[in-house]
Image (cartoon, rainbow, N blue to C red; front, side, top):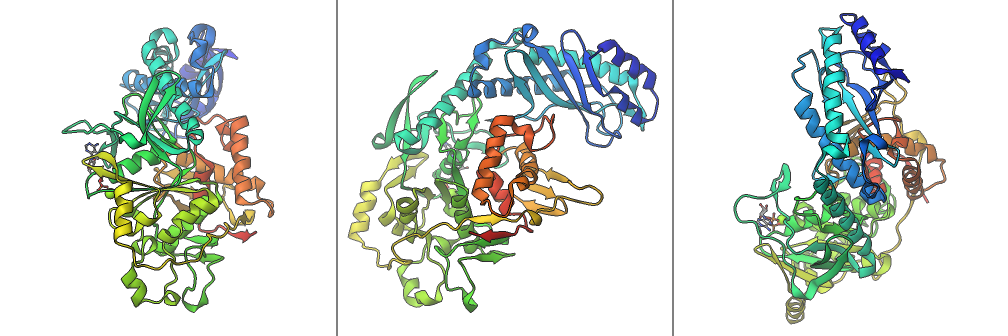
Length: 570
Ligand code: ADP
Ligand code: MG
């Protein structure tokens, strides 16, 4: 390791040289109060910025051991430090006016969720942050003096502000840690309590807007309040006893008039797979980690999925036990989404009528009379939802204000009335008894099996131009895999750009396990196991600070949407 002074010398020496001269600063430098590591130096001021790390010895950083003694706590502490670093970078790294993207210090942007990320690491020896620096330039020449100012004045301020325990609000850090620990604990208890989700009393579910995920604060905001019959008490490690609504395994309907909060509740459940920051309002809204939002997604590609549980007798005798299309319809896409989710291990499905294909959800008596079953390929979800639970243990939470036929197949009916849930199960069952649904059941007695698929490695080509592997992400919803665009626009449970980026690299990583024999499920598990033992960086770039957690289920979603994907059915 070199001393910081040498870095200073180098910057002075290359000042005014061509931008490539910055390559000379790669390496490790001892700053006394921290170690600075320059892992990657950008080729020009307009390219993606250089990758840096800072490590502070725990003897100097001084974080108490209970801030990182468990995975939950470590995740929370790292998230807290990342947020602090992010704030500090905004505050201290400014006033450097240079060309291109140069002159900036940035760390992965925090969100409402607390995610496992690679922007920060903490253990008993070190605290480490990973961030980028846009090395400053004038035109395409090294702006050495500005770089010196960034690395020797601004950066130490940021490090002191965010990576030393004495300089941060210990009470806030503690609250962050305890909130996350409680949520993880609560999620971990769901199974044994027989629940798929839990919504704490007092939770604030609505968001500021469709594009602003912070809690709604203007106007009247109705805090969540559980109906007595569904009220469950839980003892949390930090907060102690709390109460809230437990949603049991099985089939749950969310009904209620338009605009009474059905979708808002469902959206909170969808994101209940994540921990939320203190003040979010959904800190104690949790759902089973394998919960998948299912929706219609017309025009997506489908590769050899057995959708025969939902679709059969297609025109011209097209096979639905091995259904492929480059342009799925609303109903076939929704069927494929369910089968793929089950193949990848989903145990809870969330479905909102707002984003479903009507003909997939329901076929009423009159329509059954008019169009004979032989001429209707679709077995609607209403005839499968119970079998899903009975035969496969897959629960469904369904928001549907438009069809009372579902009363027959529900275990529980919750009605949202002015944002307050009411248990109306009895009433719904009474009505179902009084006005017998005249529709005939369709599709037979059993759901049938889920056909597993074996992905073919050769169908994954990450190359573009001269580069053998070229994978990038565009915003939250697109992965550019080689020359192919993967559209994740319908994957509503992704919340962070870094998840999309990580999943892109993980697709390529997963191909190492595709031997023509292993099923997708087995491959997903192998990738997940590697991440667990080696860390998120194993899927790609070793020191990248912009990777974030994703689930095997999310990786499956991306693989299934690669338009070149080829599989063999097992
Ligand atoms: P639905 O799906 O029943 O039609 P939504 O969930 O879309 O209703 O909610 C309608 C509107 O009410 C949304 O703008 C949402 O932000 C707002 N809203 C939802 N829950 C609450 C609440 N608890 N307090 C205040 N406003 C809410
Ligand atoms: Mg709605």
